Image 1 (cartoon, helix red, strand yellow):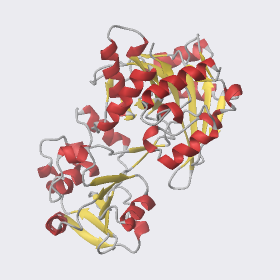
Image 2: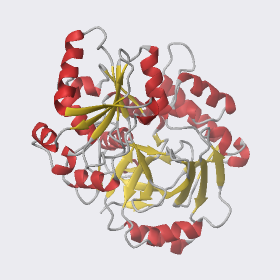
Image 3: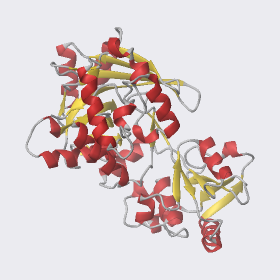
Image 4: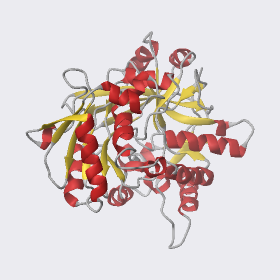
Length: 426
C-alpha cells in the first residue's frame, strides 16, 4: 500500500501576494517563452520564476536563481511555512471537449517515494530523459517540490469522495480562473475526522501516476542522493479517485517530420498503411480525431499529410496484425492505439529507434487538433496521426500487467496548477 500523509506545506500568503490569480501557473512543460513572460509580469512572486527559472544575469545559473528567489519570497512573507500538516482539497471545474462543464476533485498529500511496483506506486508511460535532468537540478537547488504529481487511486467505497464533497461546502482558501477558463479552488482539511477518513481510504490503495512521471523519478533520485529518512523521502501529489465523474482522458496526436526530403521513407509509409489499414476519405479535417474504436470494434486513426492535404480514416484491417507486431506484450497493450502506431508505423517504415522516440527525432506531439493541423501547414511537420483517448480500464489492465505505455499515450486534463502548495524537502 502507498504511504499517504498530510503535507507540511510551504504556501503563499494570499493576502500578501494578491490571490492565486497573480501567482499560479500551468506546469512548466506546457509553458512557451511568450506565456512565461506574461506570467512573470503578473507578479514578482509568480511561481514561474522558480519553477521555470531564468538566470539572474547573463551566463548565470537559473537553478541557483530559483533557490535565491524562493528564499527571498519567504523573507518577504510571500511564502509561509505551515507548522500543522494538512490535507488540501483541490476541485477543478473545467470545459470538456464535448462542451460540457465537469468538476474533477482530489486532494493534495505527501506520498512516500517508493520503487515502482505492485501494491504501491506504478507508472503508466515510458518517459523522456531530458526533463528529468532539468527537474533534478532544480530540486537540488531549491530542496523543494514545486508542483504536485497527478496520481489516481481506487475509491470503491466512495468514502474519500464523500469526505471531499463535504469539505468543499464552505469557502475555499483560494480560487483562480486560469486562461482556459478552468476554475481551481483549494480548501484546507482542518477537521481531524475528515483527515482520518482520507487516510483510511488510501490505506489499501495502489497509486497510478497519471501525469508527472519525470517529477516522480526526479524525486526518487534526489531522495536516494540525500539518503536516510526524512521529508526528502516524500513527494507532493494530487490524488484523484478513478471513480471521480470529472476524470477525463484525452489523446496526444503524433506528428512526423523528414518525409518531404526522404521519398524512400514516404513510400515505405504509404505501402505499410495500404497493407495494414482500410483507408477512407473524410469530408473535412474536423472528422480527423477518431472517437474510440470503429463501429465494428477495430482500432482506427485519423491521418493527413502536407503533400496531399486529404483527411483520411485508417482502420486496422485485422487485430491479428497488431497481435503479431506486439506478440511479446499483453492483450490490453496490443489494443492500445499509441502502441500499435509505434510498432506498425513509427518503428516500422519510418525506422524510428527507441532513442529517436525518446529525443523527439523525427517525431512531435500535439494535444490539440487545431495545433496539429497548424504545425502541418507551417511546414514544421509533414504528416499527422490523430489518436483516441485510452479508457481508464484499459490503462489499469496494461499497468497491472507490468507494462509501461509509450510516451504521451494519454493526456489528462485539466492540468494541476503549479503554486497551490510547495513541499519542503529539508
